[in-house]
Image 1 (cartoon, rainbow, N blue to C red):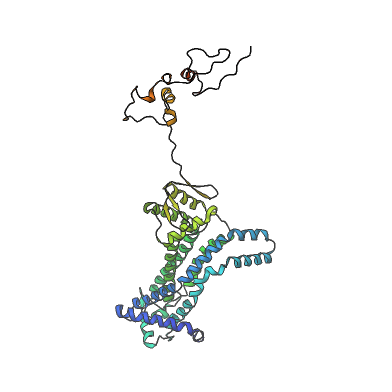
Image 2: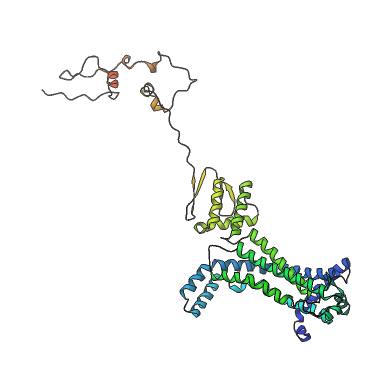
Length: 433
């Protein structure tokens, strides 16, 4: 064991140094030999490591999203080359290369924190065996062996014998009860994290073998934690339980604020976003703008939840822009077809039905004006020039036809009343008898 620890001293030494620094701070508050000082030092080490791994976690999310996007293409390749496994693998690798992702990208955070887990295990195992490791000297070693968490020493294991536990200043019952509770919590947190991912943040429109694998891992991982947990020291259980709780909270935040397209979490998020945008009339923050921008750019590729979101904004008189902003639509009508395309048109003014006029108004020229005289206008007198009868006006006498076609008493007014046009009339051709 000493040989292995010396080979990995490049990681065990920094880990032990970080624990000692945190122990110095918490020891000044709770006492250097207490379980609070050493336990909180381990918890702080976990938090520090996970903060450093946030960029890898973001990369993991992007890789997982990319893998989910590739699921339909992967299914086609599997069906096309189901009898040729080698060709199937080649096409899969080609697809991963074109998309710039691979299945191992989703395991980056776990792989990255594995060396720290290995180093912490050897540090705590050294405390259990009374061996100094890293920067932990004899004085710190004695202090760590005195530290208990709810009656269980940091270096004790579930499988330890009663004699080993008594040397650490505890009873076997206390150690097994504390370790059993921590193992159950550790397995339960892992199960809930995986179940939350499968039930809320997976595109339900795509059914692939990848989803079946994830469902299987949802049950396999908790069992693995339970089996291996009985061989972990209490300090390692504290480390692993803390990192599981951190992962669970981190994933809950991501699912709530940046869900996978097509998932139940996205439908719930868009409902909340639609209420906020409708209430305030705009998007707030980079996250909301980025999601609205992605939905607008998709066009006909939008899923049902995204189309419902766009239509809800339209009904509220709002229009989503390509830059992620939401503005009020003035005299615009946005219509989204079934294929996802949106059309924005200017709203035409309402057509007003003209008022019906009487026969006298139409004959006096009211029809040409298109509107009735105002009620408050001064009425015209019968002596006005415009109201004189047309018979009183001098009219040019029509030329009599050779056959005496014109009848006496006929004039312009009589012709107008008989349905003929006003104005000079074309003379009739003389009739030949």
